[in-house]
Length: 272
Image (cartoon, rainbow, N blue to C red; front, top):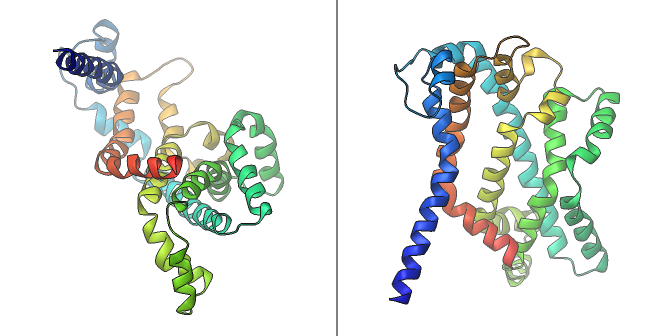
């Protein structure tokens, strides 16, 4: 009876937490099908009259194709740089027993404790002096800001990969890069998927850093364009909420399909 009661309470608690977590998404989706007046008079319930025109209007205002391509360029480019730089760094540090490697790893890990707000102004100022803002500069900023966490996860995962694999490959004549590329990186697939998913959520949805780094209208990312619905004298909540649904839907689908790899990758990177 005690075990059954504990299980029932756990299920009830899980359902309550899930509902609390899903409630904001419910509000976003439901209100995205309402008129502006209906949102203010009937916020919590289903629309009195479903307005499907919000979505094509939001797509047109966002210039969705061009803006999505800009966001995709930044996200994919930054992820590519982050995965290879972090995995190679973690591999080199984990396979070297010298004290310097340990010190370098600790310095990288300490980067997790530095808040972005503390380096925000110097970072943007430095990139501005080198005329390296907008999309290329933004990708390298994400690389620098994401390296600590990614390297930490890869380093932990590499502790579970025996060095005997490297030694066997060396005896067969393989060099360090070939060992990394052909043997180590495929074994790091769960961690790589974790790094890709977690950072794609950040890069795709980020507003603060692009608002500071991008100063050319043709390079705006989707979060910057969504802000256009909030003018000085008028806030188009119905269109903004429709735009938010359009923006978050691809990432929700991505996370649903890859969540098992994310959980395994975090466990491999943090527990070892």
